[in-house]
Image 1: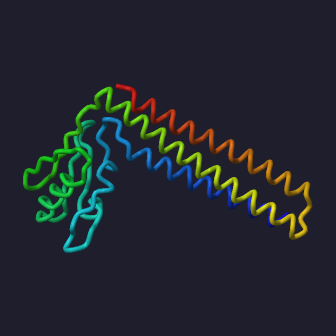
Image 2: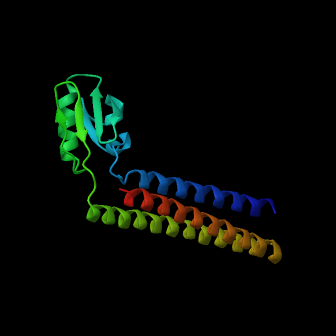
Image 3: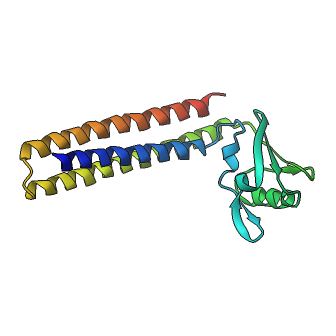
Length: 186
């Protein structure tokens, strides 16, 4: 029974990680509001080392449509400006010699629909990951049958894995619905 509980705990932990990953990926899909994590993936050349912008500058949102990036070293202003332009995020930064400002344009209806599709795609990938965790866990539980575990205990554990899977699929659906609502709200 201890081994079965260990597999159940591991499955829950893995599903939780998958849910966090989906949530993290969804935050990267912008909803028209300026958010510091929009430039999180942009790497700058910091003395020959690729470094995240957040490691070389403070990223703030003075208002809902503007990002302000203030480097800790003045020499990094041009480097950050160039990295954002080359990042393919669709931003056109302005650089006043001290701060790099990004005006986040409002989303068009067409762009909103594309972003909703992208969010749904992320959700589907998450659901696939949750289901594969279920499959891996059930395979591990069936191996316990060969090692002498009772059939009833394994069947009960498989039922618990299914309940766990269903609950995490609902959580993924909830995240997607929330993001979709956020994207479609003008």
